[in-house]
Length: 239
Image (cartoon, rainbow, N blue to C red; front, side, top):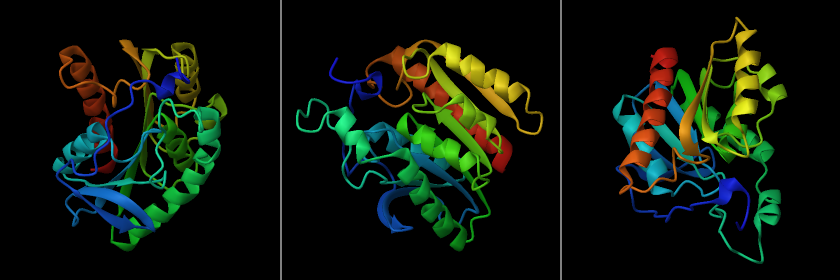
């Protein structure tokens, strides 16, 4: 294995896929889709492979079709992780792309959305993006949060969450193993003021909701179940 589990199965990136378009928002190139007139926005924060991942854009389109204005910012500045790059292995690459920096940048995008008249914002983060989202959820910048196969998220992070949060994890995950997710669940259960939901998907590995192959029917089915769970959470708390 060339890097940690989050680096496996990289997608083939494409700037031309999806029903939406790329525009600048809050100082960042962003893939936007859905109704620009909606007062309900969803921020999708990518994994280490960035905002051009076709499956991420397809999911953004799906969320947009449900009545949300969806924004997928390029918090990696056109520098997604490249597998097998000997000059910039993962430990080197990640130093240039800390989730703490992503959190500060997400606040700029949220400010831009509010200036457009958006009244409620949900955020979902995938792998690397989950750490960005949990930081937002600790500070009331958003009204609902979803983390899918999170990386770098700690139990202390969960203790600090202030908004409804859904955690969708994998049974086969060295980064956020089921044992950790069960601790997340226990921590949320003793926070009656915050609605929390934790689900461990059986038989799938870290990254399953994004890095599936279209021809793999079982993988697509599992990914779509996670996508439905994510969308249901946003409908419940934003609409």
